[in-house]
Image (cartoon, rainbow, N blue to C red; front, top):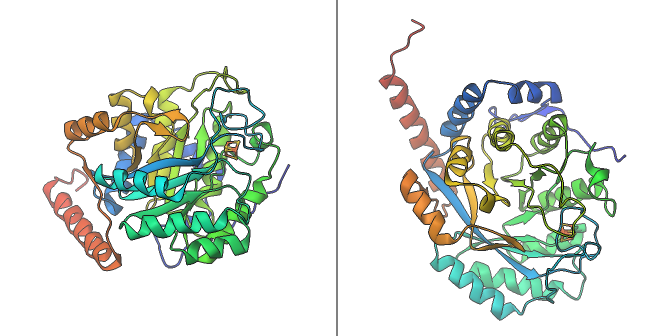
Length: 358
Ligand code: SF4
């Protein structure tokens, strides 16, 4: 098994952020009574975010299917007999048309995903043009193209890419049950190149892959203990696809998924925790509990790469019912102003409550 790198340190720039979580500590969080866990997660969430705002991204598959990797959950692996229709790399113009539509629907970030082991040199000029075009529309850009080398990471950053998505998927211990064509260390290396090039990191995992609860803790420890925590942490619920080796795996208990969101929120207090794949199988009440647990980012649109996603209209209806607004893009000085306002509101809230301990 690949030995993953764990960095045990606290983050001196951000005293709220710890990079030395242990699996035992995380297991203790998972074991809290549900209401206590939710209260803790919501308290952490309100210290760092507007609790009634959700960031919205749109994800477009720019190259679909025929992937040489053997991820056992994936409809796009060439080794899995699924009904996904293969598509070559989309033309830049088509990608930019989709980005314009996403912006009109209220997305602030446009994510582009390609089913590759890694981008080839011949693909890079097209990919770089896509990034420049998306940035010119005033959107944040994100890509997920598989493994990167150091030079490719620098090229993407040079074109203006804001985020690179590369998930760890599961724990180092469970990893070989899910993927054998790339190692856990390969993934950590790509994340390191992305970070060193100066891009923001989007990295999370999938719950429901037949892993144990210790595996879930171990995955979150890997993410939270990265030298710098990912700015965006997608927590996916497995979408079981016919023709994949995980098509018949046992259903995940909904509360286990919600607990995972809450624990991720507590461990990575300043990251956007994204309620990602699997949302179409969740009713409104379950999604609402995920928001209460600290999820504050979703994908809009009816397709998530190749899996179903709730229609945008339904998302807007749910946001209206919950009084949730979508987050707008803000620069660094606005971010500082917002942090101050959040701190002020928290102080005012404290003053409203009678302190029963006194
Ligand atoms: S998850 Fe990504 S790398 Fe794995 S098979 Fe699917 S497209 Fe390929």
